[in-house]
Image 1: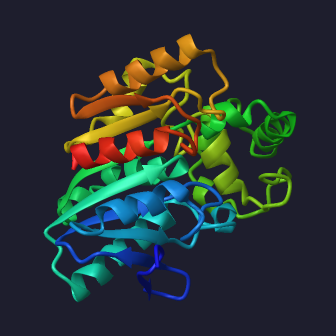
Image 2: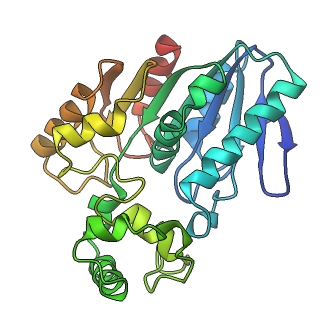
Length: 281
C-alpha cells in the first residue's frame, strides 16, 4: 500500500508517521490545520525518499486544531521529544528539517533555539514561508482584535504588545477565531498576527536589518522554496519577488528557489519541489 508505514506515539499527543530506515532522518513539519495524513506534498516526499532516508511526518500538540492553544515553543519541545525517541530506536547520523507554511516558523524557531547544536541537524528546507500577519490583515476581524488587545494591555504599539513580559502567559481566549471556528488563546493570536510577534519572520514591512537579526543565528544550509502563485501572499508579484530576495539576502546560508504553483503545490509544482529537495539533500 502507498501509505504503509509505522505510526509511532511518543507521548499522548505527540508522535510521527515513519517510512524508511536510513540513518539520515527527514522530519516533515506541516502548517496550520495539517495532520499526519492530509498533506499531499509530504506524502509524496515520503514515498520518494523512504528508500534512502527515514522520513517522518510529525504530530505535535499544535497539529490540527491544537495551534490555538499551544505555542511555537511547545512545537520545539515536541520536535525535540520526537528526535530523542528516534535516537532511542535507530541510528541517527543526520537530521533534515522540512517545514511547510507555518511549519517554516517551527524550523526557524528550532534553529534560533540551537537545536542544530544539540542534534546533528545539518540542513533545512522552508516550503512556502509566508507571513500569517500580512495575510491576516486582509481580514477586518483580525485588525479589530489587535486593536482591542492593545487597549486591554495598555500597549501603545503592536510591537509593545508583542514584547509584553507576560505575553506567553496570556491564556484568555481571543475574540477572533481562526477560520471562524478555532479558538486562539491571546498569546498565539499575538504571536501570529501582531507586528513583532514571536513568529513574525516573513512580513513585508520587516527591515533588512531586522531580517538579519532574525536569521543571523542560522549557520547551516537552508533552502527556501517560494510558490509564485501562493494564494496566501497579499502583495503584487513585484513586491513578493522583492520580499523573497530580501529574506534570502539576510543570510549567506540561504538558497532561494521558486516554483510556479500555489501554496499547497497541488499542480505540476509538486514534482518540481520534490526534485529540488532531492538535489538539496
